[in-house]
Length: 141
View (cartoon, rainbow, N blue to C red):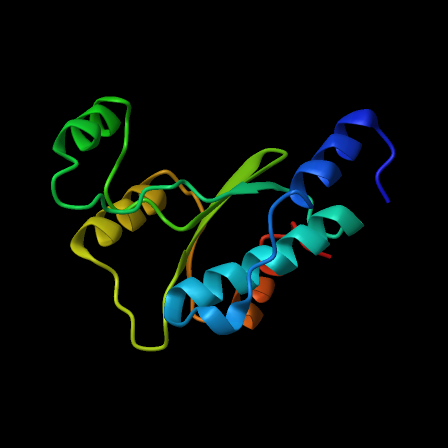
């Protein structure tokens, strides 16, 4: 259970995120939403000892060139993974993929950068793999 005011705010924030109807989604999107739902619960219970977020880095629709250019100027990088985790003296990245999904060239490049800087990087294809990865990183009880 959370004790400090800051943790209470985190609790309120996490549960202000709507819970999606997973039956309306499929593939990587469904996996992503399923993981977020579990990560919210793990964070609130104190089992997940990391700050985590999704860097909204999706491809823009055709015609959004002005907005797309502004995002690039602000630091948007192609290939950034789906989930970023930050914790005391560490960080890690998880790319979510369907059973047949493959990394794009940009995602491969980002993965290599993580390796270069000794930043843990994992490709997960199920909630079970995400859970195992977070336990291996020692941020999930």
